[in-house]
Amino acid sequence: MRPKKTRWVKCMPGERCFKPMCKPLNKLKCVSLTLDEFEALRLADLEGLKQIDAAKRLKISRPTFSRIVSSARNKIADGLVNIKAIRIEGGCCKIIKKGR
Image (cartoon, rainbow, N blue to C red):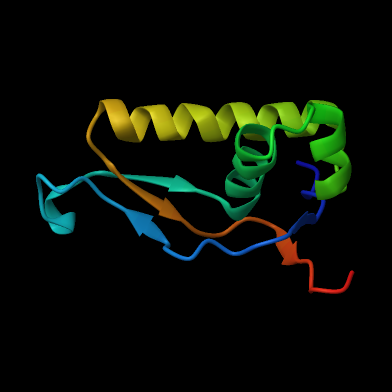
């Protein structure tokens, strides 16, 4: 398998885990969202960028961006529908420092 290309993310999430209030964390199943998936959601859904523009920001191809954002949306839906905690962790990312 080919190694993953480094993705460049602008911001780290403030909270790393979101959970339903109805159960304690140790009783919940968990969905893991990588930092690049988090950033893809931010660019596509919060900033409203077109996929080609968002892909350029992450320094990846448009088809790769499409796969990442699709995976992220699937994980978020799974967490919301099936009452799971959502953790943001990992991924092959580097943080863009301010001023770049």
